[in-house]
Amino acid sequence: MIEIDFTKTLDGGAGSFDLELKLALEAGQFTTIYGASGAGKTSTLRMISGLMTPDRGSLVVNNEVWYDSSKKINKKPQERSIGFVFQDYALFGHMTVLENLIFAKGKNDGTNSIDELLEVMELQQLEHRKPETLSGGQKQRVALARALVQKPKLLLLDEPFAALDNTIRFKLHEYLKRVQERYDLTTILISHEVGEIIKLADKVVCLEQGRINKIGSPDTVFTNQNLSGKFKFPGVVVKVEREEIISVVSVRIHTQVVKVVVQHHEAQALALGDQVIVVSKAFNPILYKLEA
Amino acid sequence: MNWEPLILTFKLAVLTTFILLVVALPLARWLSTTKAKIKPVIETLVSMPLVLPPTVLGFYFLMAFSPNNFFGNWLNEWLGVKLVFSFAGLTVASVLYSLPFMVHPLQSGLSSIPRSVTEAAYVMGKSTWETFFKVQLPQIKPALLTGIVLSFAHTVGEFGVVLMIGGNIPGKTKVASIAIYDEVEALNYDAAHLYSFILFAITFCILLVVYLVNGNHFKSLYK
Image (cartoon, rainbow over all chains, first blue to last red; front, top):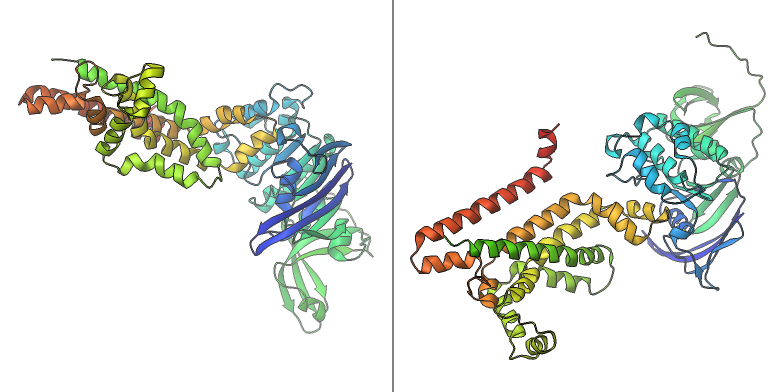
């Protein structure tokens, strides 16, 4: 259980504002923080990790007090059990992949096995390479593995996939899901991508100007209703065509484009680039086995 | 041919560079991270030797270190150190005179390391100390090399400060640049030529090595 209660005045692009955050997360839960830039998302992660100090409040992780302004407790980042994945990977350029992980391990006992992490993240082939020779997706896999070496209680990810293209992003989702389940991690991810959130998160926290304006499961938060469809695919509107009686909306789901028929007035509410969910309820899907 | 001035020059340059490295590393680290209001003042002071005539520095050193003044007198009486017209004084003056050549490359190197890299190490449980030596320093190797070589070369090339504070005492403060001036004054052009050529050749080689190494030329040569 992680109980967060932070108050801090932050400097945003449009003047300063107060961040006020009260939040309880269950252990093992995957939470996403969603919101516009400058809403206080990164600051929240930095305060959880101890890289930034709130003006007042408290932070209790699994009954252990990491921060409490009234009792003057403020653990250093070094003393908190955190795995942090940065958007720019933050790999140590003078060390190989393996050396990055070994450095993270330090002299600590009770760490995750480096061999196992290399295997899970499929990094064995790359272990003797320097970060500068790796692609963005590979670098982020190293960063994720490195963040997990010390068996952190909390895994924090600050828009780790923002700089990557979709195909690589989808692959990394798989890796993230895999390690999250395997190591039973309590995870907090910052993301802009609704599709990503629906796919990965148990809970989404929407931040606006330092305050929570919506909280709940991704379905309820993003669609304002409980969708019980058998098929739910998050996608992006790529084309809206107006026909005589109906409109046809092309939606890109993952790497495929599907067409969905909608009423004119529904189409008018959609713009190119909008994030949507395609849901199907009534029909029974049929499976065809693909011949190899 | 008297080798003494050349030996003295390089002894001074090596010692100065070493002291500078020890002094400039913490200073550059502080400058690259601090948000203190006094930072611009410190930065200005560090950069002053770049624009001031060396004679100004030398003059102030001479005044400060003179046994007739409070500071010089205190040094002399309490520590038994005489900084005027001595090799020790020459070294102190050289360290201050070459300070920007060491601090600037280190500071810009340290500032160029993304904040996230340092923070990643902290979150891993690494102390500030360990992060500095194992993460930050290895990432600024080119800046370190530049700082070391520029400080060394600049110390070899100094003249005004040395003349003011050190004078021209053979074996103690008569470095190569002064010796050249001396020989020219005495119309001893052959000796001046020799000293000059040696200084020219050595500094050329040192700087060439920096450009070769930092320009990644060495890597391509040995691949």
